[in-house]
Structures are given as C-alpha cells and as structure tokens.
Length: 433
Image (cartoon, rainbow, N blue to C red):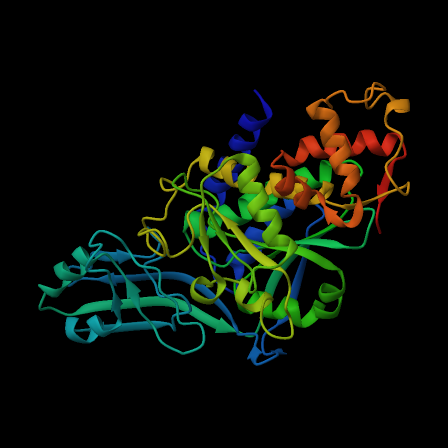
C-alpha cells in the first residue's frame, strides 16, 4: 500500500469515528473530539477556559449538554429523534417537556422548503430558546395531525469550560506557520470533520519532517468564540512570530478547489496559496475577503489582530447546497476528496519551507566557467539549465524570494530550489536573514 493509500485510509477511518459525535461550541462533544485527536497526535495539549470569562467584547458561554430530544405523536411514536440524527435539535436548546398543538410547535420548527428531504443545521448560542430541525416533508406531515404532540429536549446549561487543543511543533526559527481548524459542529462532514481530520494528518506529517525551518502552531478550536479566546490569550506572541496562516475548513469533498484571500491580498499566505495551486496545476475559485469571509478568518484578520490569514479549501463553505444540512454527510466527502485537501496543504507547507530570500556572496558575476557552470568558449550559447543558474544569481539580492523567482522565470519552484541547493554548495549564495 503506497503512502497516499495509507493516508486516505487513516483519514477516512477518523471521519467515520468522529461523525456521530454531537459537537457544539462547548461541552462533552468537543472534549470527545479533542481526546480522539490526542490519541493520534500525543503532542496535542487540551486547554479549558471557564464559562463567564470575558474575552474582548464576548463572554465564554455556559456548557451545553444534551442527552436526548424527540417529538412524540398522539400514539407515542417518535416522529423526530435526536438519537437518529443529532441535527434534529437546535444547538444550545433549553430543556423542554411539553404537550403542544402543532400551531405552537411549528413556531419552533426549522425546515428547508427548497430542500424538502434535508435537515437544516440551526443553533442559538447566545439567546435562550428551544427548537427542532426536520425535513420539510416531515414538517408537512406533522401539520396534518390535529392532535397534541409531546416535545421533549433533555438538555442542560451549566457553568463549565470551553475547550480547545493546541500543537506546537518547533523548528529552527521561532517564526511560525499557524494552522487553525474548528471542532464545534455536530454531524456535518465537509463543513466540520474534514478540517480537523486533514489538519491532524498534516500535523502527523509535519512531526515527521527532518530539519524543519519554521515552528508550527496548530489549533483545534470552537469556531468564532474559540478563535476569540485564543487571540485574547496569545495575541502579542502571534503578532510577533506568525508569518503565514491558514484557516482549514471544507477540505473533504471532490467537487472543486477554493482560495479565500487575506484582507488586503498582500500576505505571504496569499503568495503561497496561489503558487500552490499553480504547482499542483489545479483549477480553483478565488474569493475576496470583504464579500465572502465567514469563518475564523474574521477574527484573525480583525483590526488590531491583523494576522496573515487565508483559507485553502475544496468547495468553500456556503457555496454548495448541502452546506449546513444533513446532506453534508459522509457520502458528500470521500477518501480522495480528503487526500486532495491534504496534498493541497502539504504542498503549501513544502513551499513555505523552501521559500527564502538569498543573496549573492560575490559582487559582480561569479566566474562560472572555472566552476564548470558555463563553457569557457566565448560566444557559445548557454544551456537552459545553466541560464537558470545565472538568472538566480542575477536576482540574488536579498529581496526576491523563491516564489518571486518562480513567477518571474515561469519555472517550477521545486526545480528552482534544486538549483539554489547547488549554488549554496558552491558557496555562491547564502540565505539573507
């Protein structure tokens, strides 16, 4: 079995195991997910932040724990059952046990008329309420029943903790590459599981890298409130050390590839994202920040934070009809889709690791012919491979990195890096610090 097959098999196993867990922004689902990841990545540290802690303009909410939720008809038959699909209960619902007519119950039902066989994903984190989500077909069926229903949600809100996970993998430099993904949605495959699954596989691979140049900061957080908590705790260090950063979400389907630009489109993360798609020869859709942001890049790119965040994705959140519905299930993602997301991020990191600025050791051109890099016969035509060496030397000014050289010469960045290694061996260039 080759390495790609092994990685696909592992990621698919993790997806199957994690899919049934009812995650939310706090509570046992997040802890179960983080503890599962920790078995794969022992260097994951799990942190707990108390409910009620003030973080900028927000407060960490109480924990939400749910045991069950269902609607019984007049025959005591369950017509909606949380244990069959954990999307059936509105996230963070208050407990309820009530006999209720349909007209009253209907005020707390959510469905999708245009996707009549899909259950929507709905939450109410910061306003107390209760509710059920169901297919529109189910809703219309219930409407025909003139009898009372029994609505039951067995849940509780308690003072507890918001949990998140962090992996720090040190490199030669304290400068950091920051990867962020979220662990706060229930049974959604692309929008939830693909991010932490692919990120866990990437963390395994980074751990295996010899002679890592950069330090890697990898976090598994509840979306929005988790990134706010993390920024609140680490902002000075992040601003000092992070040179490139990626929000990892929706990386498991097989439909397309996408890239969400940074706020001003001018970061190293942007350069690397574009070069990654070019290197892999992938078609992709580009989305701008001001119209299409919707995940944790909102917090990481907010004024005063200003971290260099982009998102590398398969089909972007909100751009596929299955998004935030029961149709975003394990049949929507695939082992090949996850592998595509994995290889996308792996290539981006490989490019970051080699992408440095170099400076020539000598003033004026070095004597290439005495090093057998150029013919000693005047007027002879230089071979293309030798011309590339000469061009690299011409732009070894400490300002032009490998991505710039690749764009300028229209040449694969890894081929340029091979030539750089040759020039380094001959002590003709050195890293410009």
